[in-house]
Length: 364
Image 1: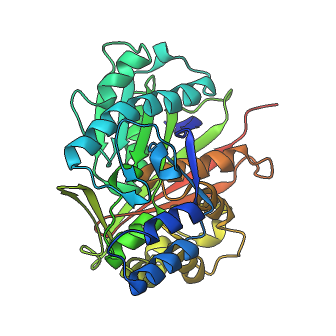
Image 2 (image 1 turned 180 degrees about the horizontal axis):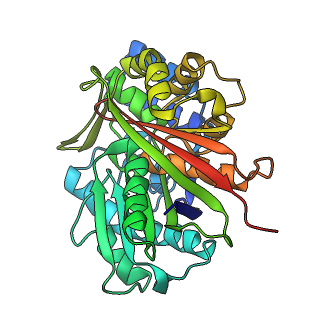
Image 3 (image 1 turned 120 degrees about the horizontal axis):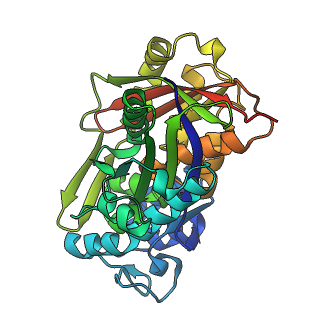
């Protein structure tokens, strides 16, 4: 039984902020010497991001919001509990909005949903977002629920793998996969290079997918094989830990270099003949990661255009990002029925997650 992504929905916080404004704000923080200011300017400028969305209007100069993160031009450092409280307020509406959008294009209704898989690494609470989706979408109280937490940027592919296996075991299942990441809640004002790089790329966003058994009446993305590969190095180069002032992301310059060295062998192993791939959905952890993947896999410059465009307009929304790319590939009229899509995502570990998908157009 082939599982199919019937539709993908996305949602974004209302506040959109220019990368240049965030660059100026971050570089102006007390304690930043000239070297740190230059490093911040270089990191923000090199990110290939124009705009990002945030649940914190104050980052864009607005005065509203329950969490105080700015006093004039000085960024504040709220404690982890206050940041997580804001996640508890802001995440559930985005989970619901993305899920409603996915359901609206799927040909299924909320009453059809049998399983819920939620994903997030930027906050935690119980009863959690999986529980709240049952309430907010008026799903059946008997819906099975699963939550994948703290897997990081790679988590969308394990979530889709879980959904595909549920459908393989139960062809009548309709699985709602929903992801929300509110990375801006964990903004750090440290002048440490790792924190500067993290501040230059991460953003907020939500995505959802409806997965069910493939049929002749619907289009979407048929889910094929998955693979996971843990690299021999990089465990300390990409990490996500809970600190006293928010979650602290470690993202060193070694990450793109390690991926660049290893990705060709891994991709050939887990994806097979790369010449058979018609389109790519590569998680844009940052511009340098995309550059390294493009070079290592000897890609045409246009191959990663969908990933670069999502990075440019939204930044790195952690696990939700790759569904934005797959959404755009589905909506691209230039893509044909049967196009083979390879998805790659990278998470703490370093871990590489891969999937093969096939685009299906609905019958005319």
